[in-house]
Image (tube, rainbow, N blue to C red):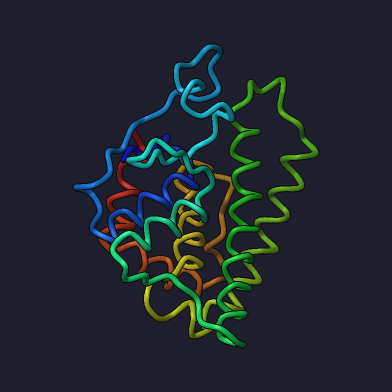
Length: 203
């Protein structure tokens, strides 16, 4: 199988973390895609041009990190990210959506910063800065929930992939006044799959 990524995409990073957590390195080839370029050969593989994109052995392509991660998780018949039913499962889904909401805003902010300075929208930049601070405040109050403290989950993977965008966006300063969130992020950052995918994000 081939997993098409860019090293700067936090969504592709989520999939790469799952590849490592599931020990699938020998079954999946990581391919760096050329995105946001006219006539990129990648567009013949995935017409939307988005990453991550997984091409299975049967040639079928899967787009979107939640779908890809769910598929990868089930490959060995021992899913570790399946959510329980009832209130516990609802809580896990709530936290994953909350993490993805923060990540989505940070991704919009990052794309805006990659535009030429004269093409950036001050309104978008101001909105996403404010959103990031509200979300960081919310996570400072939420990070102690059991689902965020136990075994690595999709909510935790999405959240750390967002928080570590601080290394590429100096204005995303979320640590000050948030000791619990900072301590959590520092602990998760040491996990081998998280550390490996963060290190190569600078490529």
